[in-house]
Amino acid sequence: MVVDIISPYTVAVAQFDEAAERLGLSQSMRNVLRAPKRELIVNFPVRLDNGDVQMFTGYRVQHNINRGPAKGGIRFSPEVSLDEVRALAMWMTWKCAVVDIPFGGAKGGVICDPHQMSRGELERMSRRYATEISILMGPNSDIPAPDMNTNPQVMAWMMDTYSMHQGYSVPAAITGKPLAIGGSEGRLDATARGVQVVTKAAMRHLGMSPESSSVVIQGFGNVGGITARLLHEMGCKVVGLSDISGGIYNPLGIDIPTAMRFSREHGSLRGMPGTEPVTNRELLELPCDILIPAALENQLTKDNADRVQARLVVEAANGPTTNEADRILNGNGVMIVPDILANAGGVTVSYFEWVQDLQHFFWSETEINQRLETIMSRSFNAVLEKATNQETNMRMGAYLLAVSRVAEATELRGIYP
Ligand code: GLU
Image (cartoon, rainbow, N blue to C red):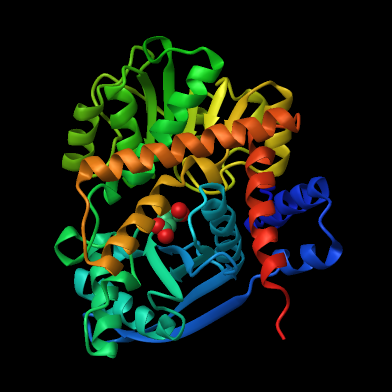
């Protein structure tokens, strides 16, 4: 079988180009907005538990910082590449602009398999990576956060490392930290809560009710797992779930608290009683009303998009749909809530965390969730309105909003010198 290798950056640039064309941006503006501003590659040694020294490669890319400091997560995965990090950084620029928070876009990653590393090795790698990218990091310049396979503990080590170099604590240099060291209430659930808000809004738009809607979610990590819980609590029937070991299906509905317990106790969802196993490929094609990819890029492609049965796709992951798949799904009348809107809840509460750290004054969980809901529903409505006025789909609506905001900032600031 020939497997297409799809470059996430090519996908990201093609999406931008289409928006730039529709907006009638000048060629000069297109050239500026297409290019990542900074790309840092770091190769660094880490001492392993057995005494050997292993070299690791990491990246930090800032795509555009015209609307504010660079913001975006850090992922640890064997699949990390410069091409992927570049795409994710560009998506962060548009994501921050869609929800109108004052940040530019960035992303980072280290090529590694965190599941094969001890806690000590992970800590030493995280600290050394933070040191290597500290020439970019800072509360006013570039503020990392969690992403795939990184968590509040990793953020704590990185915040401590940066602070040790400064000689004093700088909580605002990184978000997604534990509460005890300047983290924010609600940050852990934030991406999933944002997904819930836009899913609810899209359902209302399509005239769907939670009780009569079935949901399939790909990915059972921080985003997929909590989204499953929130939609289950809302009354939706979650019929399919998956994690890296494969998928499970029950057309009558899966009890999410039981699935969470099972996954915690067994290390995966595989073999959960009362469900039948499905492959990751089959999962995406299961009969359902709502499909939520919450794992990796390039999951919906020209090879499976035609077989998607859902009428609503909510992109909790970054870049889960290729451009060809996007055209097929739109052609089939599927509504897609695009990644740069759907998963923006995480960076929105990261923004709240940064603001709280800077002002040394913290908000309650209720305040955080209310502000998050306000921003996510306002953004959903703005994107829907743009898409309707411009007679286009939600992805293009989101891009038109985001790219015009970044272009306006770039125009106003002008070209230095
Ligand atoms: N990694 C998350 C994302 O892709 C959050 C980024 C952040 O909070 O800065 O949006």
